[in-house]
Length: 429
Image (tube, rainbow, N blue to C red; front, side, top):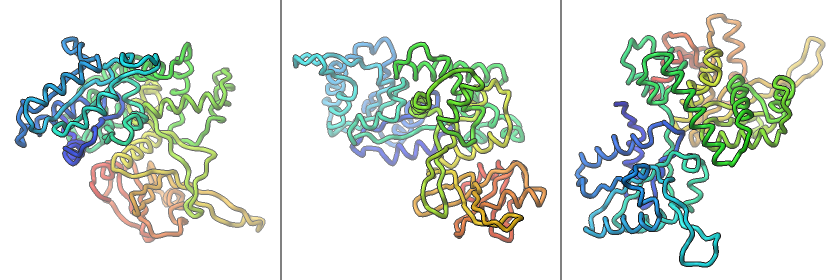
């Protein structure tokens, strides 16, 4: 069993806080497993009686009656009225609860659904409420808004490299190769052959992720456009772009006319389902955001590779994607950094140029700058990689993450160099 200690600790910290604990995240990231196989056993080990744990899987046929919101509310009220002790209620696949006509009013637009039930049940003093779901609505970022400030979100992500590495039962020397190729979805870690892993990841896209987006946003006859857009984003992961650039790519390469506004909407749908994340550009010296272009990263490197049939597995792009996911998993807010500087050309003319810092990672008042590099073995290459870091004009920590394995070291500029595996496995840099 893969232990998700970080998420267990989050659940423990939110225990009995009076909020609806909503476990969100991309499908197959382990939301249900976290509750039923990790958290419930922890509760029982720490003195909670089994009779005080109510676990209802609403996708099971035997619980079909509770897909009626009134029956679900009645059932939970009866269960917890039998004794005044705290009850821990786990509702899995909550989206299975139907939205039905309110029988008490004449307005046909008045509906009762799972949100109404949860807002009602959470007010019962001896209920501690946890819910998961796996359709597009429960995966979407607006679910917390539906709870009107009463939802406490725990966002689950695929395995970090640390979690993957600890669970990797084969020769650890090959752990990084496996991770950057197939990613960190928990089920993939248990598969053995390329064929099985490839099929699993591709099937997830075709039968789950894309279908979720189509259903949620009622898109008709455009699944091919979504497929193509995902492929384009996959090919350009970590590259600066914007909807206008992507629209031009469709016109010139795919011979398809699609407006920038439509592309913006489709990207928003992918972001809403946690498939990709958008990273803005931040002017480090000017302390402002530059809105013209952004970068996009996949929530999981294996999913990105599967989109391209594992043809484009260049480690420089994948390293960037993995580093980004690691920073987000550690709680950082992440931007792409821009450093502007003045200089003169060979003719003595004054010029203004921009250099890029791959990641500006902020955690409260703490900040660090991170550059991803395949190699810094050649001095000229090393100087190119650190040029932007040297020009930030501040004393925040600066890190160069390199593909190669070596003993971490710090140069004369205070810049810290570390191999990718050490970076991902080290708790603090």
